[in-house]
Amino acid sequence: MNSRNLSKRGYRMAFTEQKFTEKSILYEEAAPYSNAIKLMMTLIFLALAFTYFFAVFGHFVGSREVPEQAQFALLLAASLYALVMWGFFSMKFRITDRGVEAVMPPFRYSVPFSEIKEVKTIENIPWYVGWGVRLWGRRLAFVSMRKSAVAIEKKRGFFRMLVLTTREPEEFARRVKEKLQ
Image 1 (tube, one colour):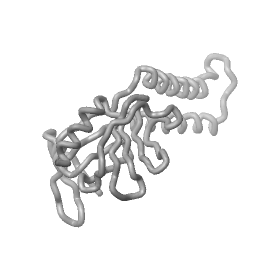
Image 2 (tube, helix red, strand yellow):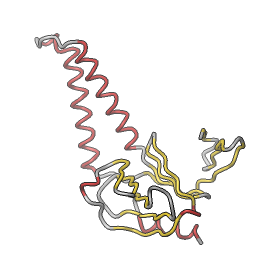
Image 3 (cartoon, rainbow, N blue to C red):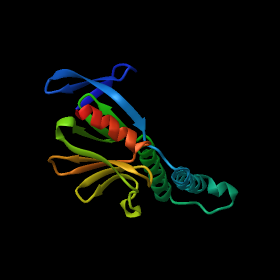
Image 4 (cartoon, rainbow, N blue to C red):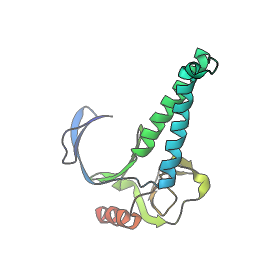
């Protein structure tokens, strides 16, 4: 599906089945992040960047020269990590006129309102689930931090539940329930 932002008012045109349809974004929020995860991810990136910088320019300060293959590998690792950081810190959750969307570039997952069986909040997500887009049994989780989350149970499909770590899970669940009625 190819889509472009057309205005700042929350309307989006999507090319679907050879016709244009308008999708209205009713509510959108960025995922919450703890200061600890921000610090940890930034420090890892800085360590990779510093290592690459030292590998390229270290011979100016008396270090031995690093092979070009190692320099390329470090540049590739730092670039991929920066891309992952961008995707992770761009995580958003939306309620549209058609359903609920979770976006973590380059991934996007939508659940139409007709597919939603139940919406509830769950307590803290276990530590072993991890961060980012996670396959957690038959659940798909968009996790940005350990906290209460919104669980959207589906009627059918491979993933039976979508878990979203929104800023205010009760408020997000209430908004989805309002649209279901």
